[in-house]
Amino acid sequence: MTDRLNLRETIATKELENSTPEERFQTLSLRPILKLQNELLLGLFRNHISESKNTFYSLSLENKVLFIENSLQKNIVLKNKLLGVALGMFTMEEFAVYSDKASLYNKRIMSLVVERIRSQTAVFKG
Image (tube, rainbow, N blue to C red):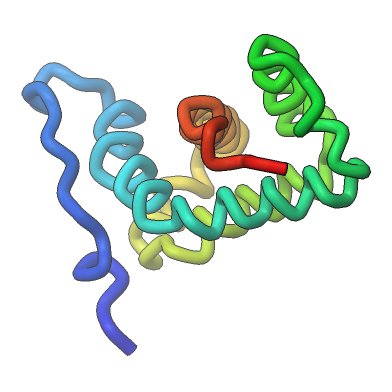
């Protein structure tokens, strides 16, 4: 199998030396993983839209954003799938870092996923 780290792009960012360990982990691991897995994240959300009887497509842009946020906060099954997409790309070293503060990193992952999906609302067409 190809090394997971080789699959990811390096995301240009500000200096990391003044960052907290959590910010470094987000920048060096979480963001590249979510960028790599973007199509799968969108596919899972598209599937959620279908399971929701496609009501998403008739909403205004403002309500679509609310739908995204509410879905990713309240639908535990969807949330766990999206977290799994990220966790499945961790190296063992990254998993060890994640495990120490799983709750904190889960919040960071979901925040990044919400922003990623919200910023691509236009790709969801009914």
